[in-house]
Image 1: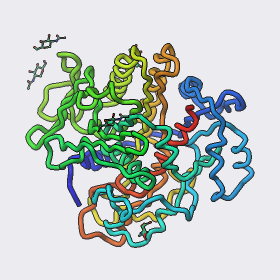
Image 2 (image 1 turned 90 degrees about the horizontal axis):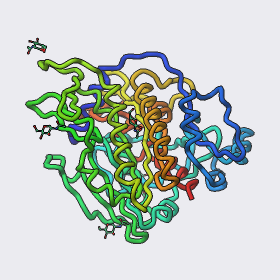
Image 3 (image 1 turned 120 degrees about the horizontal axis):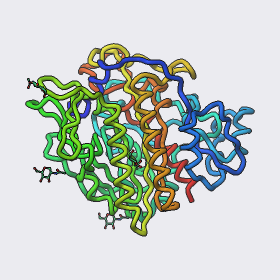
Image 4 (image 1 turned 180 degrees about the vertical axis):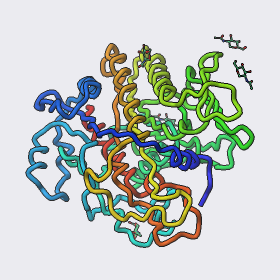
Length: 431
Ligand SMILES: *[C@@H]1O[C@H](CO)[C@@H](O)[C@H](O)[C@H]1NC(C)=O
Ligand SMILES: *[C@@H]1O[C@H](CO)[C@@H](O)[C@H](O)[C@H]1NC(C)=O
Ligand SMILES: *[C@@H]1O[C@H](CO)[C@@H](O)[C@H](O)[C@H]1NC(C)=O
Ligand SMILES: *[C@@H]1O[C@H](CO)[C@@H](O)[C@H](O)[C@H]1NC(C)=O
Ligand SMILES: *[C@@H]1O[C@H](CO)[C@@H](O)[C@H](O)[C@H]1NC(C)=O
């Protein structure tokens, strides 16, 4: 298995977990026509967030392909509703499986290919995320390509962003052959991984990935400097310099903020997190995290608000890391089935990072109202569904190598495919 710096934050995260109680609050995307929001399920923040997301189409798309699910009373009700809270649901068995596998998808990387990494039983794939209010169809690559026709879809963020991109490329490739048109390693031994672009000539769609674990300008730690340096007020131009050419951005970040870091704003040093040998004030990373989202969303709007072309900005929420026991021992991912509903709660750091993401998105959505629909901001809330799917890597029977990747976030096919199914369902409601 390839060892890259990208995996470090997950194991560091493991050591930092401090649990506080938090009950999961659902983020819903409601259509204002038919549905009244059950206010008891929402905080004020989230209500405001929901009401500023404008969704205009009906749910016929999202309920049409639901025949593979048992029809419950609940689902029939869902079919007449026009909206869906994607985050509120459970994993249900589904024999249709995934569109691709570790052999059929040629772009899947070894590190993410669970099938070649020791798994013999494939039952872990036969699960589908089922929101209570609707059914999300199996990913429809043709429809994604149609909606994204003549567009550039950019994934920007950390290794989870990369995994979401790789899932998408594998699924789109079942309908149209992608050409890798750009690949740059970022001066790293991890060649070709960090900045890549594919072109789907059938629909003139470009899909790209930009490695930027902090979104803002940052200097990643090295063997000699054991902390990251972040500039909270400037975007990372490795992606932002292409902002003018992007039509849709999917942001994903969080795990790297658990690492030691020094934070600068302008020319002044604000403080540090887990800094050793530094004479700066420990300021944690939650405020910093909010600040970098504020900078990122604010500058996207600043740079694109004046133009004529619109832009869609999706924020994939924090995906908890998944280890049981020590992250580097054998048999750390023994679970073979998702957790039952309610069995596992989003809490601690996971909950707080997600809360900050929702809150900064809410603030930004308020800010962009003046641009009408040209700038659309939406949350792709995967925190709960990712937490409760703890089954992907099965190293329960042992593996020849140390497990550096976690049980969910690094496994394709796997639950990350559901993130893209939800993403497509959101996109279908846009036009
Ligand atoms: C992977 O997909 C290919 C093509 O659909 C299929 O022939 C093959 O049997 C699949 N392999 C596994 C392990 O499911
Ligand atoms: C996609 O990238 C190619 C260059 O590889 C460019 O010619 C084309 O205009 C781009 N299309 C879109 C929709 O961005
Ligand atoms: C920050 O420092 C640089 C180099 O010393 C200087 O050129 C720049 O004007 C300073 N910026 C601010 C906002 O003080
Ligand atoms: C750390 O900063 C404080 C306050 O500026 C100063 O008094 C102290 O001498 C510094 N310590 C070191 C080791 O530099
Ligand atoms: C960023 O934070 C500032 C200060 O709180 C606020 O005025 C601004 O609206 C925020 N920007 C965004 C995009 O949320």
